[in-house]
Structure formats: structure tokens, C-alpha cells
Image (cartoon, rainbow, N blue to C red; front, top):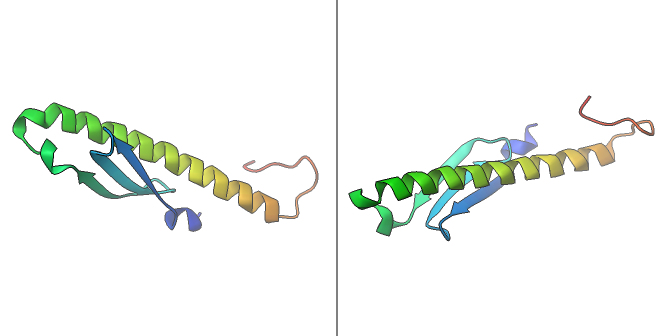
Length: 86
């Protein structure tokens, strides 16, 4: 579980105009918004980009966590047919 907080992923939306950095554990590390979107008239678009980038980051975090768990399962001496998580 501790390793998951050290693995970073980046979710992006709008062709990279909105980006979210997160850990595989799901902790948000940072938000990057393209300066061209900082006009008040772009408020709705920025909100949509942030939501989409967060969802993309969450999906990547879940995939990274699953990959890490797969690695851990491969190193544990488990009986045949025994699977984690319980």
C-alpha cells in the first residue's frame, strides 16, 4: 500500500489543456490548466476539463495500483488457486 503513494500518474483532458497529477493511491498532487483557458468566459470548459482529467487520473491510478498488486502476488509463495485480495 505504501508503494502506491509513490507511483505517480497524470490524467489529461482537452488535448492536454487540463492535467491532474495523482498517486496510484488516488491522492491528487497537482493541477495544471493551460493559461488560454483562464478567461471568465471559459469557466464551464475549465470545470469540464478538470473533471475529465481527474477521471483520467483516477483510471490510471487504478491501473497502476492493479499492476503493483499483480507484481506483489507474483512474489508471494501462495498455494495454487489462491488469489488476492481475499
